[in-house]
Amino acid sequence: MFGLFGRKKETVHEPERQQKANPGKRRIYVFDFDRTITILHTGAIAYGKELTGAFVQKNVKKGFADFVRRIVGSGHAVYIASYSDDANAETVEADAVSGHDLIKFYMDEIFGPEQAIFMKYRGEAAGTADPPGNIIALNSQDFKQYHLDIIMKQENLDPENPEDMKRIFLLEDDEDVVRHFMEKGCTTIVPYSASRSADTVATKTLFTAYMPESFLT
Image (cartoon, rainbow, N blue to C red; front, side, top):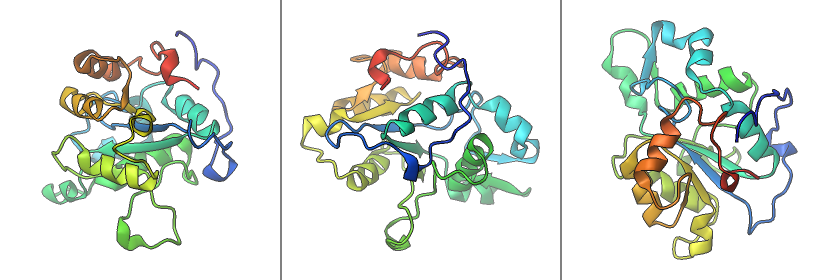
């Protein structure tokens, strides 16, 4: 579908303004970060000019913000599941950002510093007073099963229920991760093909030139 997001919407749909989707039809969109949201792979770490607003704006795929606003405004859930790890920032001498901080930096630049669409996951110890967080960043190397477990728990999904698993809509450029989610019964952008799904998600024009009806609300 071409030109779907040609007109930019200025209103950011924060969580408290979302429409309420039917609980049984509410979708959970899970985005990878590098080469899914971004054009260039960050290497899970950024410093120097890579932490400027100009760089971030150029490195995020066109149409991403509008796509997120559309699905969030329809009452669906969004998550970012990334292998970017907080500890990466300690591996360089310069001031560097990685993991949750890097992804939050990008989201604040794209949606505004007061945005509440994407918040850092703080784990079980964070308590119940704050939102649980939907940026999950850890180099788990388990095909993101760690991330999926957190999402299923937060969304009250039953891994044994095929209808629950279909409600997870994955956007991911790693073929092995796509295959893992596919085996769990999740919805991928190209059904029945992990390789084509991964390749499609990696394209620069993902959100502006190709988005099947199955992924739209």
